[in-house]
Image (cartoon, rainbow, N blue to C red; front, side):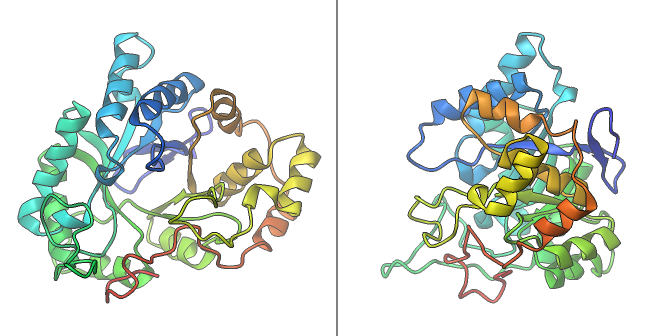
Length: 319
C-alpha cells in the first residue's frame, strides 16, 4: 500500500484508493441527498467513489464529481470512479451498451473500474428486476466467461481503465481465471465484508491470485430496511468493537474501517452525514495491534446483512 496516498496497486498497474465512498442508498432517500453527500465525501478527502447502474444515482454522482472539478477542488484523474454492469446486461452484445448507458448518465468519458455486479444473469430489458405474472424473477441463461470477454473489450475500447467482478465466489472466480484465451484477469472482487462476515478464506484466495478484495457493508447495515435481515445485531454496537474504539479513542466505525485496511481489504464507507463522512476518512493515523485484529477476527459468525433472497434459487447464486 502506498501510505502517502493510501492507495493499493491493482494487477493491471492502476492504483485504487484504499478507502472509498459508497453511493448505494435506500429507496426512501431522495437522489438529491446522494448528490450533496458525494460532494461532501469529496470535500472530506474521498477520491474513490463507488456507484452502479442499479443504484439509479449515476446522474447525481456524475454531477457531484463534475461540480467539484469545476470548482477546481479535484481533477478527473484524481477521482477513482467505479460503476457496475447490471444483471440484465450480461449478454455479450449488451455489455458495452450497459457501460455506455452508465457513462451517459454519469456524463463522463470513462470509468476507472467497471465490474460485473453479480454472477447471476437476468432477462434483458428495461426492468431492473424482471418478473413473471407470479412475481418470480425472470433469469437469463448467462455464460459468465462470454460476459467477461465483452468486459475485456470495454477495457480495450478505453471505456473502463480496469475491470473486475462483485459477489463472486471462489468457483466463479476460477472459471474466469482458467478461461482459455483470458486477456485480462479481474483486478477485484467486491463482496460484503465486516467483522461478522470477514470472508477470510475468500480473501486469502483473492490475495493468492493478486485480486484485490473490496468490502461493502463494512460498517454493517441499517437493520430497519425491509430487504435486510431484521434479526441481525447492530455491528457498530458490538461490545468488542466499542471497547476497541474506547481504547484507541476512536469511533466504532473508524475501528471497523481500520480493521479492513490492515487486512488488505479496500473498504467502502457510506454516510449522508458531513461529520460522519469526515470521521470515516480519519483512519490513516492510527494502528490496531495484532491482539486487536485477533479480537475482531473472533467476531466472525457468517452473518449477511444483504441476503441473496432474490437470486438464491438460481444455480449461479454465489452464496
